[in-house]
Length: 232
Image 1: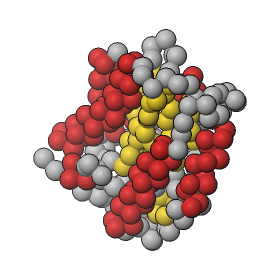
Image 2 (image 1 turned 30 degrees about the vertical axis):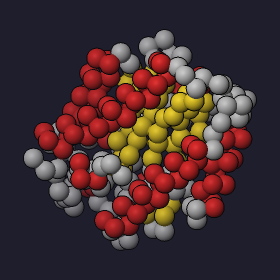
Image 3 (image 1 turned 90 degrees about the horizontal axis):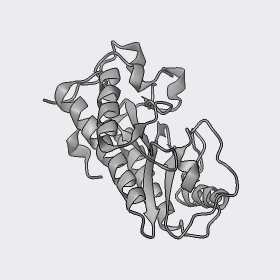
Image 4 (image 1 turned 120 degrees about the vertical axis):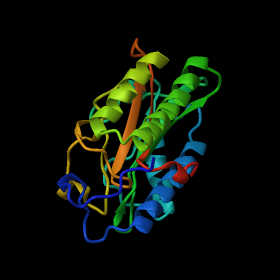
């Protein structure tokens, strides 16, 4: 079954005058490229604040100097925190550690938004958490695509699946709209509260897993799209 088609009849899914499919896909591609480039430069011994500065410079070098939310790089114990909470300062990436990126570049008129978790060294639990965050993203996305789940049902599915995997799903990151800038002028509600089947290319699906003991976490987010757009 194909995904729900975009509907202008739902106020939460309206777009601005500059919206275009090609523009949104360009923003997504640039965002994923930036994530990969930034992650390659994150190394053990780096202080989190320096990694954030590096990420901003890397994005500027790519022509992505404008962002619509703060650029985040989170190391180790900071990976359990919701985005609205500041990181504990001075955290250094260890030899066997976990980190994630969360960036939101503006690409011309369009909003990009993406996140991914990476590991360095050898740590089986960190590696599994990073893999599971991305795997859960795709399981939830495919359930939406095939069953036309509402936003609330999508996150109910993600919550149950996360628990079966042995993790907690952080509902402080419940997904959100994306559009031509600024989407906040159109809709600021969460995907997890949306009672309709969300349309493609209108929403960001966020998955933030946390270790039940709250020692570490993993994050993955991307635009809610059909299978044909994966792998990027």
